[in-house]
Length: 372
Ligand code: GLA
Image 1 (spheres, rainbow, N blue to C red):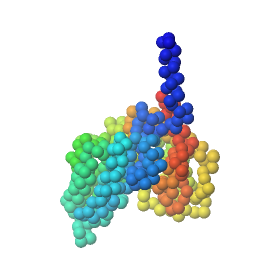
Image 2: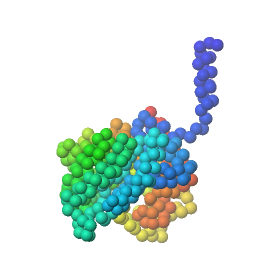
Image 3: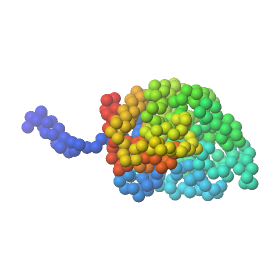
């Protein structure tokens, strides 16, 4: 057999082994660019939804827990830790060789009231609250030291106008609660990447405040590895230009940028502002839930185009971005079916209610291929 025909037969054999219609995967398509993650509820990492767990394994190379590492879940009472669900989450990630994210250590929401009190219902002192923050971080980060690779240390410390939110953390400890949280997390696991995570940084006032905050922290030597742009987007907000310049401005500070909670709300707006503030509630009026029988083709296409445009920007900034994580796996489990109005039928993700890839999935894969 000649050299050429030997090479040809090898090629043909390789072709035959690769199914012609093999389903492309997100993690495969983006392998050379950045990690692709999903936020998981327990049905995935406990594998009670076996098909869902298989989908996660095939598509994603990073995971974030929706709730099991939040203070209220893992540390509900002063002396009571509930590590079981978080252990299962971490074990799932390890079994599947995924980049495991911890979310989140210091937040004003999903944190029990006792954290901020002295035991008699009065506000805790700065010293008490710092001690509590320290002990919580050492207990949780310490338990998963070397296993969880990156932590959202502080979540949502800013108001929409860019000033510091008057959360109990800020009110009781003072402005340095952010620096302290990073300091403790770094001591608890010096090798973990530490992140500041926030929504709506694409809006100018909040972005200015965010850039200033990170600049100050870095100047003080606080080990912020990356800012997380949550990415709770809509079809018409924010503009791709705003996403583009937000990524560029944070990267210019010398840190990485992660997209940490990506989804695209396709339903009519029911609040005045585009907010991902979990305390926002709205009444869904008669016309606020128009797609209960399925997303029509035109809107399906609009969503695909929106995702293509967003990933175009992310790929442009591939040097800045290390991870893009979706907030959920399929449309069925998305928080946007109940936020900001309860009981709507939303379509914010790349996989439909049966776990099948949507046109938006194809658009995202095509964006990756075009970037090669
Ligand atoms: C915020 C939090 C997440 C999650 C979402 C809504 O963005 O960071 O943990 O609670 O809200 O589900």
